Figure 1: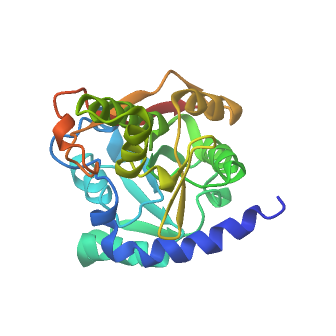
Figure 2: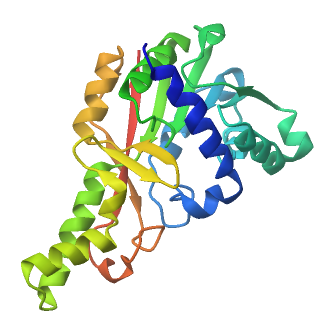
Length: 264
């Protein structure tokens, strides 16, 4: 795979460094007011007590208590390549909860020992590797890990929602009297365009590099990996939930990430 393997150690250090402030820095899909189709999809899984679920890229573990207690999966696996993230996940669960979870410190594509042993895989804003070859390899590995009838449930950050925010802020700047050139500069600053490569859907923040997605790329990469999936649906975020300088746009439809449900 050439230099693909070099992506993992570099990003592992950066993600570990951000573990202590993870919940402050990144948009929270668990926050009040967020509309997330993931919860209904998890609730629709039948006979959960007899099934294995894996939280891929579990981060600091906010989903793990829900998988254990709210949804009652029989076996819960938490996987992350950043040791500091796994340490925070164990702290979140406490000794009793952590004892009920199997923790794996490894990249998401390293699932060979789980081939055909997983019923539900969840990737909650973790399919963000900046090298799409790693994403493609990860999706293939997840497909092979799923049992017949298994399902991959994913949420990925939306590139087109950033473009939507840009449109609204640009209109707002024009409406308060700015000329087009000034409005473009104003919008680029407040929508933090310096952090994005819009052509390739990449985002950089304090050493972290992340992939942002369009809906057509969600469908393309899932099909490329051998999954069957319909069009993605939206995870809707209130304007004041981690979106900079956007509270004044609250009368517009909300911003979003993309949710998908895919089967081998």
